[in-house]
Length: 433
Image (cartoon, rainbow, N blue to C red; front, side, top):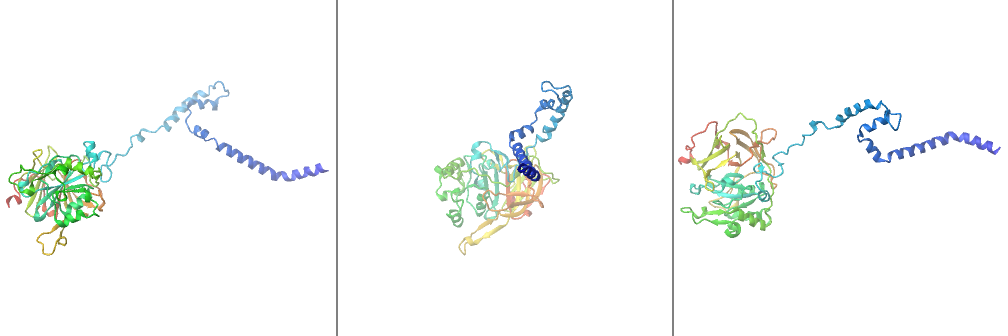
């Protein structure tokens, strides 16, 4: 009787027990088949023709004849798993500016650094005189990567030459700094070499809160010939004392290294391409005038691909190499020039001019005999945020020719005359004054 009752109970409970057992078996099965990761990896790896006979053969020793045609199936699968040639040559070329540059390329020129020393040293700005005419020819200008020509007091100009690729032993004559140089030293995250400056500007440089206090070098700060390379040239006959100071940039770099400020930071902004942007505007002659007191004429030389400079109607030479001043790119930018009488005591008969190199303004760019019109831009005052050149509308960069660039800073582009044909370089208004 007891067995009969147990049998009845088992029959009644059987529908409930079987699902539980089945679920347990299913769970165990799932766990076991998910565990061996190498097996899954191996099945995703092409195994070649050896896998084919196991599907069609009836014998574990010898593949059946039906395995032979399957060999033709294997090659047809192989190409589909092999990357096509179109996938191979796809590393995107590194842009050559305005923010990213290829490894080992100088952002000032778009060309490779000539050596490791140039790559490791800092941009160096040297202030160079351009007036009166007795200071010409200057020395070492053609070795600069970038030159800014800016108005000084009285409508005459002065050069701010930026060196990196070269470190000449003689540059000059070295002259005093201006407010615009305080923009440039930040723009190019640079060292600054100058002869002196007015007391208000020197006070700005010497401010302990100034980020470039220890990157500015001058005899006014006690830097001299022995330790910094600021040396007077006694051979300069008939030239006023203020025009006799020259700089050995190698010696100054050594001092900057001792001060732990000779770090090879980049300054970004220019963009380069060996091929000029399309343009229908031809420009072989560019004449720039500053208030009838100073001028510059640049003419395109097709043989060299350079723009050559005339000043006051005569060729403008560099005494270091006895060649005419030249550049690969000529850039003219229109920048606000603001009077700063607030820096001087009331009633002073002199003041400083602030050339405000921040924001945006109109620009002309000349390269390879072509003329481009757009804007210059300096978006912020961050160190190394240098001049950008962009087209109107979409801010696409105007591509410079890899090489040297000369930036002429003017109050208005009305001071610039552009010609398709070469003009007589001996004729200029400032030459007849």
